Image 1: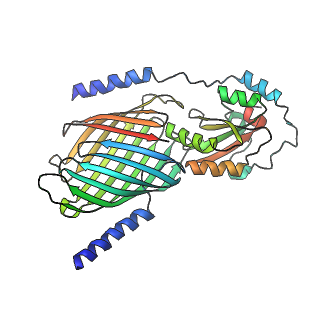
Image 2 (image 1 turned 90 degrees about the vertical axis):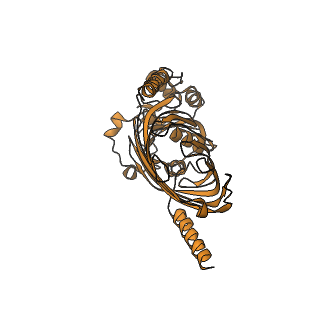
Image 3 (image 1 turned 180 degrees about the vertical axis):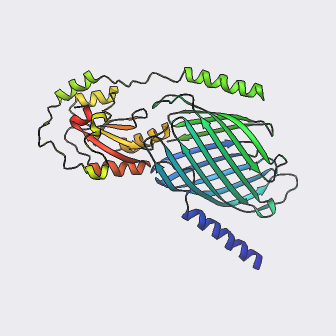
Length: 216
Length: 163
């Protein structure tokens, strides 16, 4: 009983933290965003709606392929701070999630409550990009994971409105529960209007990266 | 690894070759002046400035000499020809197409707005307000905030058209 209460308290704290903070992604007031992410660790989809310009709420479904665990969670995201300049924009987001995780592997470890908190910071001009993000995930008996990732990007030209924007990026991630704890992924980002596509390949832990975002 | 890097570079170069996809932006001041003259605006000493809070906008008229003017797209030129009033908004933090999409979505919902264009090169939002309608500086500021951005300055009428 005491364990259950402690778990509920911890989960509530995490959710509360994620609610008061702010998280990525957030769009314009009333905007919808669809996000697909596939990397060496997971394949995930997130659909979110921005209640205001700094708060969004979404539904996340994630397949952690290594353990064959599927996570479904409500994910609020808060834009804590946006720095504006004529040539740049910087953002600090907090995010969190609460849902369930289910073991789909032959081990059949059942399901458990899942929660996570995350932070993301980015700074970009039209030709330079740097970002950092971290996520701490708790899934009870199905495993707790942490992830850190940093990116540096460079655009060979500054695309104007509606043109195809192209970025060369390098991502370094660290996942403590993987054999190759730190890995490197060079990728290309293509950006046009409301759609963004990223294609890359993890050189350390050979696997493709395919990310897609669409805003409407 | 070398093969991967080569592939990335080749793909980037190919993409940049297709980058200019035939946008219809026109920076011809001749047309701007022609439309301006047709609009029959009063540019005299009592030119309406009551809605401008210049101190809050953080600019002075010396900077106006280099201020960006309205971006002429087909839609904007047509709206100006129909008697619409030009507005140019300097926007902070507009660095990508998601920013432009956000501004477009928010401002396009307003009945007062006849035409809109977000210019990433100039970092401006060009608006044409329907003849007989009004969109105050405060309203523009609030709409920009809903899109997630902040404005630095607003220019109207002859200032928006380049004098």
